[in-house]
Each structure stands twice: as C-alpha cells, then as structure tokens.
Image (cartoon, rainbow, N blue to C red; front, side):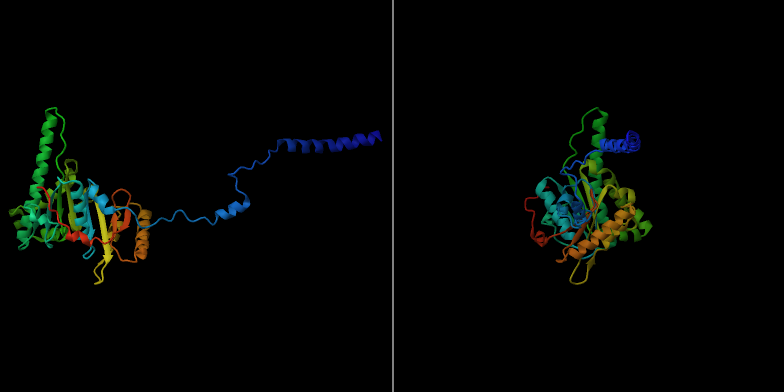
Length: 325
C-alpha cells in the first residue's frame, strides 16, 4: 500500500506543481472605468464619423480680409458680387481706420461709398484704350512714388543709425476689372507702349506687391481670373497675396463657380492633390447646402476656407461722409 501511494505521488506531484505555478503567475484582470466591456466596443461602431467637417466656414471672411496686411487678388466671374464684396471690405477698413487712404481705379461703375466725391480718390477710366491706360499709369505711378519715398526715408534713417518710425498711414490701391485692363495692355502695340511709358504699369504693381506690405501700402486687384497669364502676376508674387474666389448662380444665368474651382485646381496654389480633391468636395457640398443661392467665397489666407455671404445689398446705399484726405 505504501508503495502504491509513493507511485501515485510521483505521478501527480509534477502536475500539481505546474498547476500551482500557473495560478501564481496569472494576474487578476482589473476593471476600471476606462476598460470597455464587449457591449461598449460594439457601441463604438455607431459613433459619428469625426472626419466629416462642415464645408461652410461660419466666420466673417470679408472682415478677415479687411484686417489682413496681405495684398488681395480677387477672382470673381461676372455677376458673382465682387463689387459688393470689395465695398464691404473698404467700408470695414474705413470704420476701423479713419486715416486709411484709398485710391480706386474703376472702368465701369459710378458709386464707391461716397469716395467718388473726393479728389484723387476714385478714378473712373474714360475715353479710348490709350486714355484709360494713361490714367491707370498715372495712378499706379503716384502710389509707387509714395512707396519709394517711404523706402528711401527708411534706408536713410538706418544708414544714420537711427530707429525706424511707424511706416505711415495705410494706403490701398484698388484696381477693378484688372483682367480687362491687363488684356488691353498686353494687346497694345509695343512701340506705343514704350512711347507712353505704359510698361511701367505692371512694373509698379509688382513693386507694390513685393515691397509695399511692410510700408503699409496695399494693392487689391479685382479680376475674373487668378492665373499668371491672365493677370501678369507671377506665381512667386502671388505668394504675397490672399487669393479670393467668389461665385454664385444668378437668376439670369450669369456667374458660376469657375473662379473658385480655378484656384482649387491650381497645383501652384495647392501642391497636394489630396488637398485639392478635399476642397473640391467641400465646394460641391457647400453648393448643395446653399439653398438660398448666396455667393460662395473662398480664401487662401491662412487655412483655406469656404463661406457663404449674407445679403449685403445695403452697402450700396452707404456713404462715407466724414472721409479725411
């Protein structure tokens, strides 16, 4: 009997020892508030897709543009509401900075918030093509000379070891219908262009874009396109500008979203194809959500944003009565 007990012990002892070791090495499962049960894991599958973003920016893009120190290249198809948006931006600038000076060149309209009452503020281009380009040359040269004077004074102060003063009041050169004016400039005979100094127009504009920002001299070009070949503004120069696209469909069938689409599809503006595809989808979503057919606006300033504009028609009745020259 003793022998049998010994044999059984020899057989069972290793198994019992292994079972005991296994129980010692196991760690108890500690349940915390952050440990999901199987039911919780199944519920996670029903959570909303956080990657989907509202395609419509809820901020005030026009107000942001009125505050930027960047130059602006405004691309809007005919009927897209560009004149209204520009007047809102100017109104907002004036409300915040009464010392700001505006120099507006416009080949078409006759109302600029009352600014047309003041000499050397609004220039309505008239006459034939040569007359219009000569007037444009004179305005751009005036702004260029102001900028050049500020640069020269700053350099002189630095050479004498002094401290630079504030750059002076803000100056805004606004050229409406730049697309048509640049097209006329390109088609003008080279001999006459040289004779009348019209080549200086684009040179002055590019200088203002390149150097004006730090001297409080800004330029807004309002066009139907943002492309270099149709505006004369190179890809490098456009990096100093906020590109704006705006569009809507009018009751008469004018307008459209081509200017917004053109900016989004431009690989020189958005190098990443995935980014371009995402923005195009956002535009499609915004159009689908735009039941009131309000103007849609795109800005490349900072993170690209698409927004809807409210009814801004009241701006056309606004008059700047206390504008100071």
